[in-house]
Image 1 (cartoon, rainbow, N blue to C red):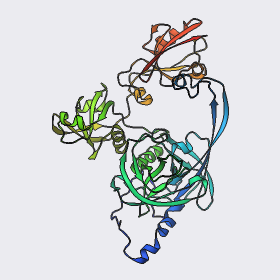
Image 2 (image 1 turned 90 degrees about the vertical axis):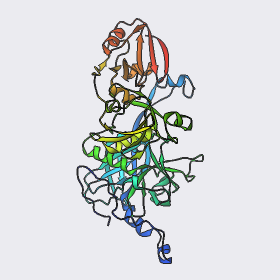
Image 3 (image 1 turned 60 degrees about the vertical axis):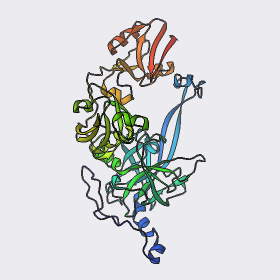
Image 4 (image 1 turned 45 degrees about the vertical axis):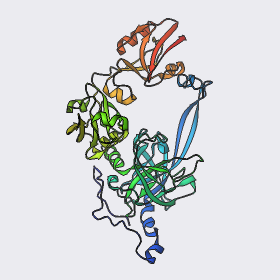
Length: 460
């Protein structure tokens, strides 16, 4: 039996009172191996089978290094069924399961198979592509085996770990290794762009969403990806820390369907050796603030451009991804102590952790039948929109929330900033909607996508 854990509205992250991590002390212990640990933990790791109907589009510009980014929505679509196979971990008796976004994503048909071959239907409660995490609910179940969450901040390099999952669809498999690295935030693996634990325990396709456990049987991470040239494990695997998983479970139980991150409202870059001396640091480390939005909570707390952020809640941060992770695991509605260096002097600031404000109003408009691009959905840019689409802090005006079927065929993407219509500058949704209603048979759009600006001309 797995250790009981109280099921509450907010799932706490448990830290064992006494860590009994040690090397085997006798021949009997060496012979015993990990068998008792696997017997206890494996029933809480499940196989996940998911189906999703997608509209596949074939474009003649596919693969072109320049035109593909502007015409990726060009061409006819065909419905196709995509199947995915992965793993998941049960975190509560009432059937809360965590897996990877790239396993379940927007799937509508999800089946969960337990180690004893029982199968259940499940639904997605909360999914987030950026973190590559999803929280599922198994329907109509009680008294399931589950794993406890250990505080991943207490994990150390060199700890023995086991990875449990369903690699290559061959059935549940266990591999062993050690934690070989912490704070791996400089890698972008699959959908995830976050902060990882690194392990040399073999992780292969199908292990995604499986458990990375310690020698006490507690969950320290969710296996998500590998670095490989051959398609198989080369001893470098990554797991999403359990502390972030705990926040996902909390928000899923509160009814959120997407993960809500605290908004920083700032840009920064890692401090390297060349920058450290000029910033009053005795060694490289931290993040130097390069820009702050007027509504940024960091600016409200007293930070300025040129400040160096060293720690958030006592944990070092050396990349923007680490800082976002640290803010996320503290949680919305809380305050975080931020250690800052300014002119060689250290000071601590309290920063409020809240979602990006929805002011001024988006004033979202969906273009009607008389518009040159019917079905186009546009909004005024505010801090929430900046965060949603990852736009630069100094961007203002009108953003494409949904290009609609006509806009997609013309090459527009969600997140494009609409600058001008037929040579007329547009700064609000009202101006853009009126300009599109007046458009002639030849339409000219000036669009900003990322840092690039392009003029798009069409004959209607």
